[in-house]
Image (cartoon, rainbow, N blue to C red; front, top):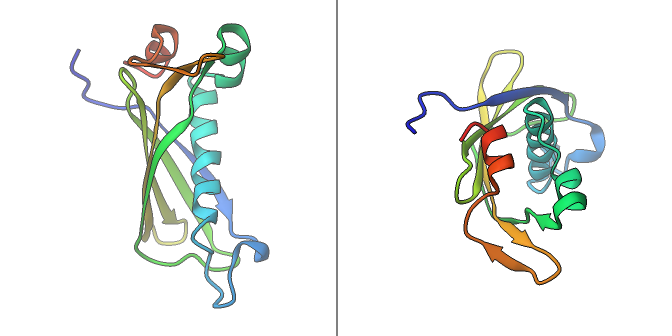
Length: 139
């Protein structure tokens, strides 16, 4: 199946004081928190609840790879939009992220996470995302 469009979801957020470092920009580790909030909102919007799926099937979806490209810094009080887009959902779940300032759309950050399926309690890697999840993600 060839896909022409991937599912995306955007969240609006304001940088709190406690997310900035001594030079008054967002500390790099906090971007993963923003990505996680956007990914969770995207999955909820698609009807995907990975915790519920785990409790029912004992299948986990750990993150195995992350990447972040910092382009322009976020500062205390900045309002920004974090967009999450699921770009792969058959072999692994890959979500791309984009953070832009709300005020002018300036691109601040790009990121990506990758998740695999693992069957507990053996912790056996599955080499495909279960159909129920894959279909809900649009694959």
